Length: 70
Image (tube, rainbow, N blue to C red; front, top):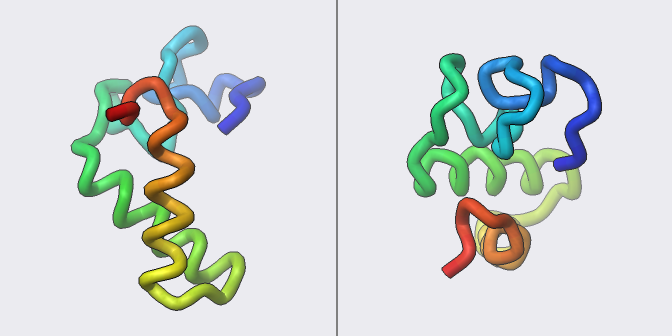
């Protein structure tokens, strides 16, 4: 996610490479499976996708993110 406001950065620390959704409150990176589940639920709610479609969209998106590249 594009981060422009301090509250969007992990741990609210400007310069953190991870966003608030991929980070714990202290700014450290959450486990991949936890982030994947949260993002899957986000897509299911936002775009009314079924779980399989949301997981596919999540996996495609996460594969492009530096922290989650394979």
